[in-house]
Length: 197
Image 1 (cartoon, rainbow, N blue to C red):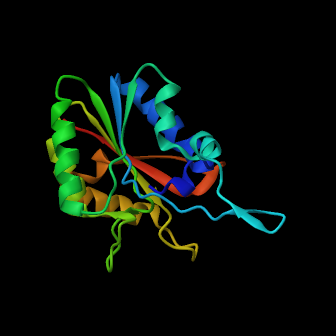
Image 2: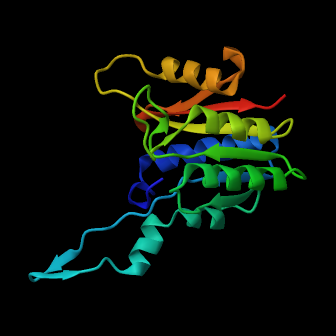
């Protein structure tokens, strides 16, 4: 997730879905795996002079860690390590998920775009093998939640195709992976979720 995108209407849906799902599954912790990549914000031009956006403003409007202050239960942990090296990042995430074995968790994968495309995945995507490694690390009753942005602008159906791709990546039956969305707020995003059995 790039901080330039944080705090938009999709975050209303994201955290609404996460808190509702955490409540229905009695999750004690939400672990947001942010796939964090910092953004460079263009300067503000005042009377012809460039000025940086004040850090206080960025902290208020674009700090993805601020979600932890709005709820006390479930606890929110934001894994915001810089996402550059896929293998090292995955090892850290797997270790963190393993360390939370004493509580029921909702593990939320939050890339910029979602699951890898058929060709040329970038840092804005999660690879299928990475999703599966995290899924397999989770314990019984934990909830896996995955952010997916619209994959095309042609108007063709995209949600079921991505759901099927994620199902295949996790190695589960199609009926195990469910969807959550709020098309009245943003039509271009869906959340896939599945509970470990």
